[in-house]
Image (cartoon, rainbow, N blue to C red):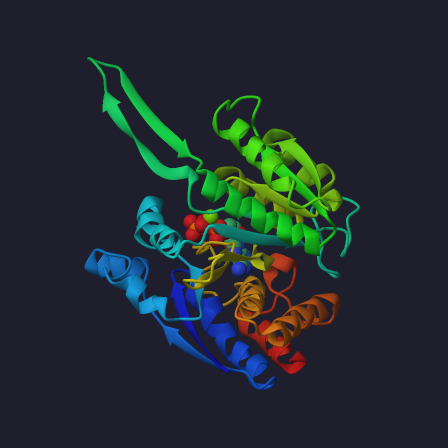
Length: 351
Ligand code: ATP
Ligand code: MG
C-alpha cells in the first residue's frame, strides 16, 4: 500500500532535519515493502517575509488528501511568534481537528540525563496534551479603560467534547501501557475550568476500571517531573500545562533534539501531523549539527499512525541501538561532535 506524506520542512533547522531524514524513511519503508510518496510544501517564515503569509489560503485543501503530515519546525528571529503560531501551526491543528498531542519522554540507554542518578531505561512516560482549546482558545482582548488603566483578558475554553476526547485518548494509552494515568489539574485556583476537568476525569474513568488515576496539581507536577520522573506512565494535561510540562519531559530525558510528537486527529477524518518538539533553533542553524533523532522518532510515530507498525518499530529500534552504542556518532547536544548527516548515515546502516 502506498502512503502520501505531506512534508513541511519549515524554518531554521526544520529543513535540515527533514531533508536529512526523508531518505532514511524511504529506506526503512522500502526494506519492508512499504511504498511512500513525500510531497513537499515550502511554507513557513521565508514565505511570510516574501509574500506576507506563512502558507496559502487553501493550504488545508492541499494537505487534506495526505495520509499524514511531517513538519520540521517553524519560527524565525524576524517573524513574531504569534505569526508562526497563528499563520501555520494552529490553523493546521485546529482545521484538521488534531485534538490530541502526544509527546513521549524516554531516557534512552546511552543518553545522559541532567538528573543525578538516572540512567537509560529509568524514565519512560508519555504526555497527552489537549491541543485545540483550553488556555490557547484565542479569546480575549486588550483595552484602555478610562485614562490610564489598561486591561488584558485571556479566556480559556474547556468543552465537554474536547476534554473527553483528550482524556479518552490518554485512558486508552494507559490501558495499553502500565495502567497508570496522572491527570494534571489546578482546581485549587481555577474553580471553573479545572474543577470541570476533574469532573470529566471522574466521569470518563468509569469506562476504564483497570486504569489507576492520580490527580496532581501542575505546580507539584513540575517538581515531580524532576524529583520522581520514573513513576509516571501516561500524563494528561490541558493545552498550556501540557506545553510547559512536555518541555520539562524533553529536557530530563537528555535533549530537546530527541523528543518527538504527534498531533492526532482521533476520528481519522483528517491527517494527523508529526513534528519534533523542538523549534527552529536559530542558534545552531546552518551548521549541520542539528540532532535529527527527534524527527526520526516523529517519523516512527507517523508510520505507526498510518498502520505501518513494522517500519515504525524498525525506526525506534535503530535509534535505540545507535544511542546505546558508545562508538556511534552523536550530535553536540548529546555530547558528541558529529553532524546531522553522520548520524543519519549511521542509522541507515542499521535499517
Ligand atoms: P523556536 O522559537 O522556533 O521554538 P527556540 O529558540 O525556542 O526556537 P528551540 O528549537 O525550542 O529554540 O530549542 C531550544 C534549545 O535547544 C536551543 O538552544 C537549541 O539549540 C537546542 N535544540 C533544539 N533542537 C535541537 C536539535 N534538533 N539539535 C540540537 N539542539 C537542539
Ligand atoms: Mg521554543
